[in-house]
Length: 102
Image (cartoon, rainbow, N blue to C red; front, side, top):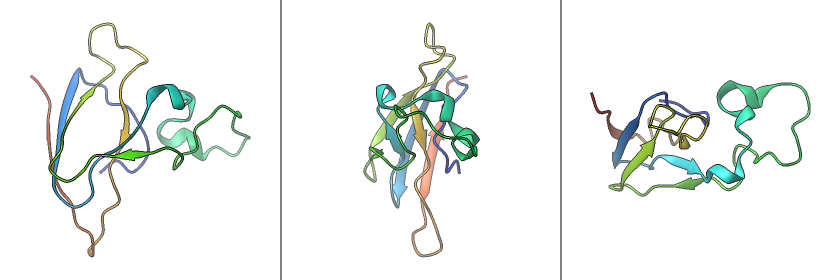
């Protein structure tokens, strides 16, 4: 589970949530990539153009098949799909399948 917004260092990843809330993502143009992963927890001020971690986050529906282009897709360095795992708990479990090409 990856609860923070991030990009994957793969060419392509297929994600399908069979049970529970679906994978969350943000449009790439709305997010300042310097704040991905652990970075948005820094103590110093965020730039005004930064999309806050919960601002504008979209979610796939249960059963949707999502293809996420990663950082190693040809000519895609610095443009990988920004996404995160949806919250899960004992009350709202998730069953997710991810596939990466070999």
